[in-house]
Amino acid sequence: MPSNTRPSTSSREDADVLDVLVIGAGFAGLYAVHAAREAGLDVVCLEAGAGVGGTWFFNRYPGARCDVESIDYSYSFDEDLQNDWTWSERYATQPEILAYINHVAERFDLLRSIRLETRVASADWDELSAVWRVLTEAGDAHVARHVFCAAGSLSVPNKPPIPGVDDFAGEVLFTAQWPEPAPDLTGKRVGVIGTGSSGIQSIPMIAREAGELTVFQRTPNFSVPALNRPLDENDQRRIREEYPERRRKSRISGGGSPYIAHPRSAEECDPEEREAALEKGWTTGGVLFGKTFPDQYTNIVSNDYARDFAVAKIRSIVDDPRVADDLIPTDHPIGTKRICTDSGYYDTFNRDNVSLVNLRREPIEHIADWGVKTADSSYELDVLVFATGFDAMTGALTRMDIRGEDGVLLRDAWADGPVTYLGYQVPAFPNFFIVNGPGSPAVLANMVMGSEMQVDWLLDLIHAADEQGVDRIAASPDAATEWTTQLETAAESTLFVRANSWYMGANIEGKPKRFMLYLGGLGTYAGVCKEIAADGYRGFELTGAPALAEGARR
Image (cartoon, rainbow, N blue to C red; front, top):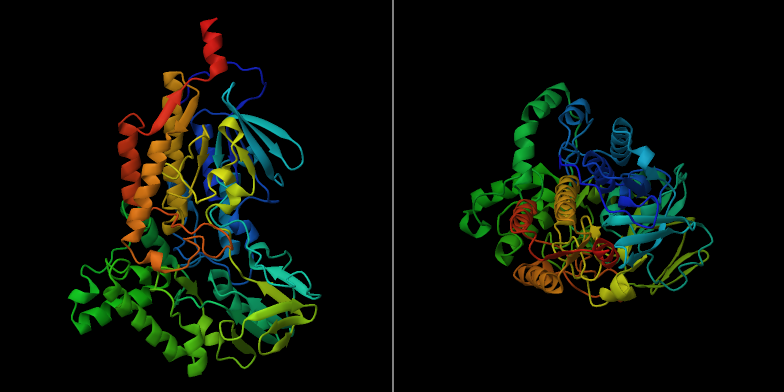
């Protein structure tokens, strides 16, 4: 965490000009509030929800849990916090994660700087005074020198454009906005549309409660059992002893956790070694199976070995071969759509009260007041659940009216896909910074550790600008174009581009198709950022505001 304190800023006409305004109070936003305070900055955070937690506040669906181990998916900035908190199981559920987030907010007195139930409507750059003027949907105005947008990579639910989507007369639920208290599904006829991560996690839980469950699947996804388990006293003792080295390894790793792939390509292994490596990856659990071999995302032969292994596992679990066929993806290399982490997903389709509808074979024609009509059948329902994902990476930003230099809208600047420098900044939007934005590792790494790294780096950048007496930090267009081109070139050398994934924006109708993430890994990304900072923040233009420059001349 930056330990420096900023110099005094120049006076402006506006009273109560904040140094930093943070949008979003999830993991990234909460840390931004804490770290900005520690750096001596005046900070306020605006949060749309009625509580802190971001995605973990809204995603309360049954079965919701993180696919990164709890001991890694937690803050590392405070050793006492890390040692005092006890995680109950390997992969924490949503309630436990939210309890942890609330504990952090209370422990560090963050709530006094957070305005809950406050959704940002617009943000306008005032070039003359070098400030952002932010307006909430309730009409409240805020003025800040810098904005940190930490509104989340997966925070804007996707409502699919199905004919009659608003006509259903029963209860409609979205996994991304699950109500509290939880609805009673006991004995009801429930339909779930979508089999991404939230669908795969919620379907086993819903099946236990519903009278009948119909799963409408357009695109199957690979899922690996979490193999979750409680953490006992011996685990807790070991975790505390290993934390310093575990965090060190995580910071230099690709994914923000201390995982090391098998030392050889699958092609280089004999059958016994290869099978043992894959079995170890499978029993490690969750998304880490996608990293069994070092070339699994660049070498289709290695990827096929992993895919064939996973297919065999699925077939060994699902009793009905036809259902197994429908559950096995055939349209993408394994892992190029995020591997899901489940607890009994495939077993669920052996239950008598669960049926699977393959929408590629019988597409939905429309939704009616009584349920779902497909090309072949009619499904009468009491409850319809949309587990249809998010407008990932960009949706939280483009839903707001963010206007930069000359009034250009961010959504217009990104009409052909997002362009950023390091994922932090968009040309023509000075002093507006994105945490875990497109162009950064974001969801490809441990988001908590990535958030700490990015916020610290941005606060150091602001401190450097303040020390130089400049008030405007802007990414140069050339630097942003070069960075985005590098991302696309790197993606083209991998298997990721073979999948119509939300990494590519392919799940949103009309969204430009472009791979939006940095593939080099968190450790490498942090090294690139450090090198750019050491080179005087190469690629950023640090200048003074016109009004302040004029005042200095007077």
